[in-house]
Length: 216
Image 1 (spheres, rainbow, N blue to C red):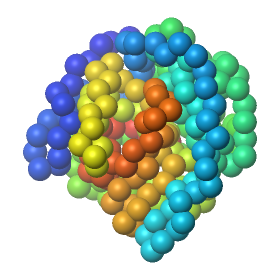
Image 2: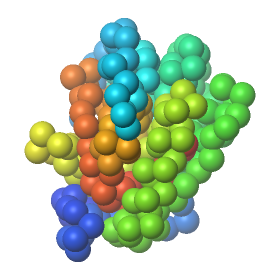
Image 3: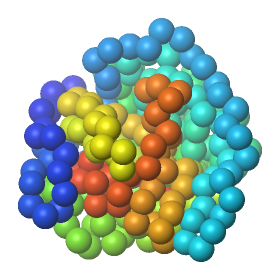
């Protein structure tokens, strides 16, 4: 796997986020493994208000440093009541100790497990452009309204609405399970840690995905 070091995440106002794969969303793997697999039953979804929806889902913690894609995919399919094991998902994805090659693989497996409806969207360039942000927002809202959890392949450092940083210089996969303010903020379920449910602005998430992609 090519190790790609990105500059920390910033807004679309012009600061760089780093680089990713050229031919498509690249492998993601964390440096520090997590020791055990944990499934967390998430409470019922937050009450829906105007422009807001959060899907009920089963949170899964990745058991090691390279199972982020299987864990994120498992979280996403749980929004439709599917519960394959991470090991089964990893086999379908072709995950190795180097990680999972591409978000195209998560799209393929999501369609296989859920029966279809997922497409891959790539964000090319080091920083997401306004049209990328608009499409991400529309895609997440559409997917969540259809009860489809989204899987995003990210790289670099993401910044959530609480100001917390989520650094993954070699890449990482997360699930998106909700939105609010009409999609201007998105609910991320991060398999790296069961406490890592956080909100992220659409621009920040699009920049975190830049030069990678997402399945929605």
